[in-house]
Image (cartoon, rainbow, N blue to C red; front, side):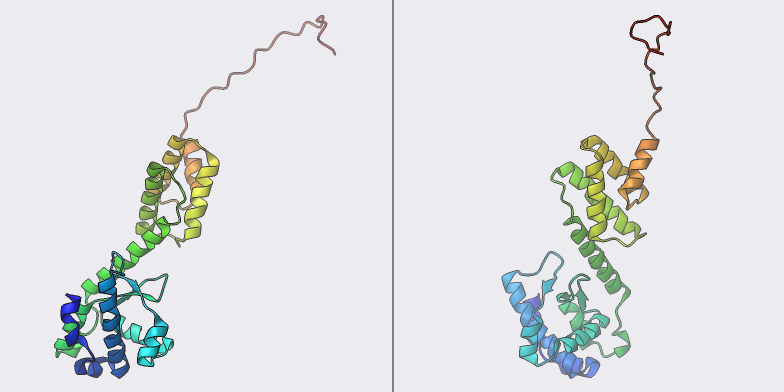
Length: 231
């Protein structure tokens, strides 16, 4: 589809009127880059690829700062998405641009609700993927439990979630016990309750253990006459 549309999406007069010459030139160059990305299958599963800003500057004379401004315009048109962690990692919607340059009604050029939802979903998926890469646990079952915890924490969106949070959580669980069953239970408690601190889940686990009566050592009556007793 991308390659079929390539020729008709070169420097387009309609786009110049809508977004300006620099954005139109930038978009045209992005199509050249995308053509190579598609050929080399260099995009990830979400359609994102890393853009060489210096190469684009050489080809278009647009500085990096100008490219970033063009990005903002293309994002506002709903035809570009950026990875939160890497501003040079982008995805572009060719079909979306077709709609932009063929629609005479300029009031429709704002991002649609559907585009916003797709963008948000892609952004969240990227964050989840990044967080999961921070897990060091080799056991598949325990690792899967950590991944479910990450999914739940990000979906709950009740805290600032970072790699450091993931690493500290895992280290706390690992340091607490080598017992796999207990570790899985701790992670489960944290997942259900959206705990970002493993200590909370550990405390919760400890508080739910059944009380066991402590058996005191047998006490012998002291007669005062044993050779082993001194007063």
